[in-house]
Image 1: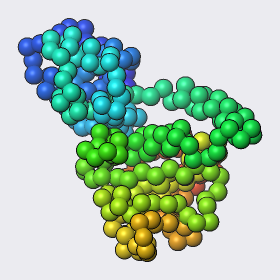
Image 2 (image 1 turned 180 degrees about the vertical axis):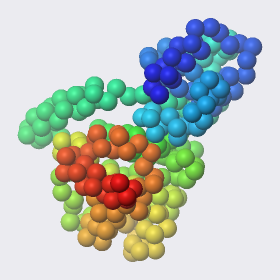
Image 3 (image 1 turned 60 degrees about the vertical axis):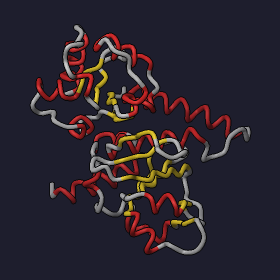
Image 4 (image 1 turned 90 degrees about the horizontal axis):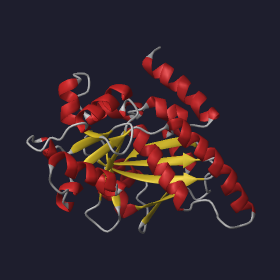
Amino acid sequence: MKDIVFGLAHEFSSETHGSSNYDEDSVFVMGKNSSEYVPLSYISKKEPRIKSVKDLQSAGFIYSSADFLEDENFSDWYKSQFNKKLINKTKKSIGILNFPDELTILDSIQNVVKLYGVLREHNVINNGKNFPVQLGEWYAKCIFGLKQVKSSSQRGFDFYNEEDKRVEVMVHWNDRSSPKGVKLKKSLVDLSDYCIIIYMGSNFMLRDILMLDSDFIMRKFSGKGHTIFLKDNMVSSYFFSHSSKHFDKVVSKNLLMKFSSPHFAMKLDSAFEKNTGA
């Protein structure tokens, strides 16, 4: 499917489309490089098997808002294709899908592991800094097909699933969970429909995933104050390594397996096999 999409992006970008209404599309797909894009509606006309964003996400494509990517190449391409400037109002409503180079990313992660190890050894950084958080959020986007869009509030970007349900993504970076548990802001849980906690080991690979309904969290762990602490022993039966309840929310099993630690991947493989009755 990747090669088909790349071919259509090259085909579409080879000529201008100023007289068409493709500029009104809200989803565009990046081709083999950032100088070629193609509207999703064009792909659907040419390739009947691809009808939705989810079809592409299940094949490994990642969705981000044009605002989040801040890619001037897309703005330049848009202007040359449709003979009109991409204004901010239009840009805010556009989503872009791209296909990541998985092997290059994995190689880069391994290099980062070595560099972070040196920095930790010399007390330059501690677990939980911005890079692991952003990597964990990227994992969530890959695995669950989340759309990361500009927030209407001041908190940056929000995540939405294919049903436009808001998802709160938390990242825990350590080989072991804190005895206090993972800290969630009650206000953010209350604003969301689901909460996904990405548990990432010191080697930056997934060691587990927890996905819970936000209503369930508010009922069961309301407590006092503005903070909720999810201790492992309170939610152990809901971890992906133990439960298949939310396997249906996984859009790309392939990427989930690729970015998981060997131990977690073995548990997932067994759980998926049991869940599908294979």
